[in-house]
Image (tube, rainbow, N blue to C red; front, side):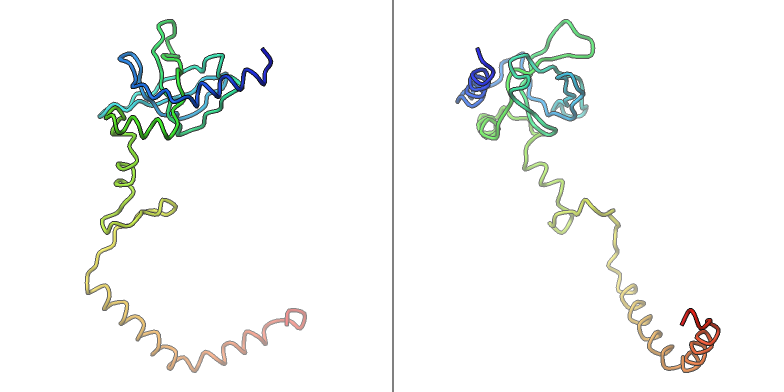
Length: 179
């Protein structure tokens, strides 16, 4: 079988409408990192304790299907490995996720609704993850202090008439080359 034909068969198998619910020995996991040599680190959806372990990609998927961090896969446990504890049996698409959510099989930890709830702050706005979160108090005293500080700045500007001669003194101290 040529490489192109093999890719076609693998992709057809992946795109097939096989929305079978995972069996008892299968588990839904999320890809955390790629470790090389067709090994991927995954995390489980168990509440309370996150378990991370390595899974291997079967030969039929290698160089034909690519997965990235954050993708979901269905894995079956294997007995022969200490570090590698499972093998990928299906790469889940967004359609699989929708069907599994409707069936009630999808883990709550991986649901998008839960992720959205965690990203909201107390006002119901999305939290900016690019900046550090600082708690702000809404005391009236803080607002009054800021207003008083602005008034003091204006008073200093009117009293600062002596600053103009200082600026000219600095200009005189500069050499002719710096002017």
